[in-house]
Structures are given as C-alpha cells and as structure tokens.
Image (cartoon, rainbow over the protein chains, first blue to last red):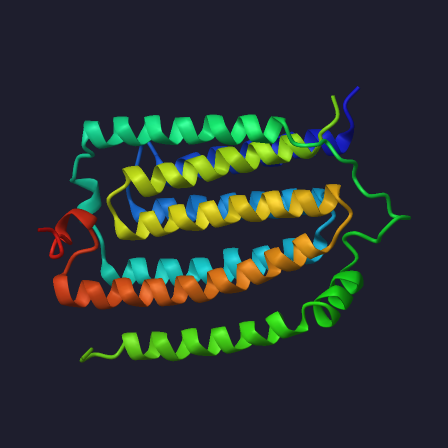
Amino acid sequence: MPQFTDLLFFAFAGMALLFGFLTVANPVSRNPVTSAMFLVLTIISLAGLYLLLHAFFLAAVQVLVYAGAVMVLFLFVIMLLDIKEEERRRLKTFTVGVGSVAVAALLGILTVSALSAKPGSPAGQTRLAIGDTAELGKVLFNHWLLPFEILSVLLLVAMVGVILLSKKDLK
Amino acid sequence: MNVGLQHYLIVSGLLFSLGLLGVVVRRNLLVIFMGLELMLNAANLSLVAFSRYNANLDGQVMVFFIITVAAAEVAVGLALIVALYRKRQTAHVEDLTTLKL
C-alpha cells in the first residue's frame, strides 16, 4: 500500500519530466513562447517536489522568483525580439542524433551513480526541524552571512551591467 | 515501495538530461537559455533531496544562493541576447559564426 506522499511524488515528478520534455522538444510547436510556458509548469512541479522534501521556504521562493520574475523576463524578451523564424527552420538530423546519443550516455552515468547513492533516511521532525523556515534563517544569517552579503553585491553588479548592456549605443 | 533519495536523484538526472538535450539540439538562443535553467533546477532538486536525507540545512542554503545567482545570470544573459539581436537581427546560433575561422 503506497503512501499518499509517494503518490504525490510520482505525480509531481511525472509532471516535471513531461513538461520539461515539452519545453525542450515539443513535437507540435517550436515557438519559444510555448517552451517558456511549459518551463513555468516544470518549475511549479519542482516546487511541489520541494514541498514533499519539506523545503517550504524554497518552494515559495521557487514560485516567486523562477515562475514569477525570471519567466516574466523571458517572456518580455521573447515578445521584444518578435521571433517567428524558429518555426520555419528544420533541425539537422545529424545534430539531433549525435546530441541524443551524448545525452543518453550522460544519463546512463547519472543513473548508475544515483543508484549507488546511500539511501539515507528522511530526518524526523525531532532530530532537526528540516523545513522550518526559522531554522533556515538561523543557518543563513549565522553561518552563511558573508556569502549572503556578497550575493547582494553580485545582484547590484548584475543590475548595473544589464543597464549598461541595454543602452542604445553599446560601445 | 517507499520513495527515497534515489528516486529524487533519478528525477534530477532525467531533468538535467532534458535540459542538456535542449542546449545541444535546439538552435534558438532563448530556448538554449531555457535548457540552462532546466539544468540549474535539476541540480537544485538533487541538492534539496540530499539536504533532506542527510538532515543538514546547508543544502537548502546552497539552493537559495543558486536561485539568486540564476536570477542575476538570466538578467545579464537576456540583456546580452537583446544587445546581440540589435546588432545582428538574429537569435539563432547558426547565424552567429563571426568567430568561426
């Protein structure tokens, strides 16, 4: 008798993989907007998997930052560039064949190493309050405070760089 | 059958392969970028799974950092694509062969 959470895992994992496949290799449409929409669905399914792993804060951040901010940026740029050419071009069979073989080989390696991983056991609530957002905040602001601050500088650098890159007369 | 660490790792590996397939096979810069995002998300999933099954929150902090860096990376990358499109009027990798000998 499988547990309810196990059923949820298979549902979310199946959705993530299906939508991920439709993101990169949609047999019906090669429009980037379609890919972006399926990427949003993939990301939301991954947020579901994070919930099953008791990473509640990360699930919220995943939806807010990825499905929200990042994907809006993607769609904005797609609309801005007005890409229609993609539909007309044919993919080269040779490229697709070689790429698929290479990816399948990598997948084989990943699967073998995943199967040899030590199973571990999910932490009970008593041992460590995994998933407790307050715990995560304590770890983040005690042990990881310096990387956190450096990250804010990185965001500032990225922001200035983007403004510079978006200037009309890029020198 | 109980869902364990290995299940999550295999899902993560499959997602990573899908992202890599997108990067290798597709020829549109934006879709290639989406493949990159997929690969980052796959790595995040395995980190969260390791964090849960080893009872250590450092993995989640790592994922938090990765999400932030990915947001910055997307902003810069898309700005680069827009600047490139302005100069060359294309977002196809096959048209961008200026550095080819």
